[in-house]
Length: 121
Image (tube, rainbow, N blue to C red; front, side):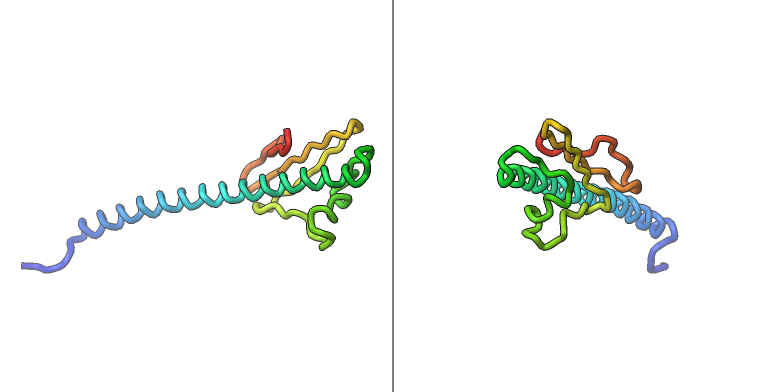
């Protein structure tokens, strides 16, 4: 009587392990993407708060003209603004009525979001 595993049994075990591995990697990838999106939403909320503080300090007559105007309110003067966790960028659009739209564009590897995640709309 032979002791050990047959070739068929080993192939079945490897196939089961491959299926479990693919399920686990897909789940981990989704969790990472969700964490990056949550971090991005937090950064956008911080930008919205910084814009409100900027407007308060300037008498609600001037809104920030650029991201550099908001840096002291975001970083406490440290000079580092929010960083997109997936390598994208934050874009602030200022209009003449004082409206601000903050969007987030993902890097191409994750696809493209034309209008991004909008913060305080």
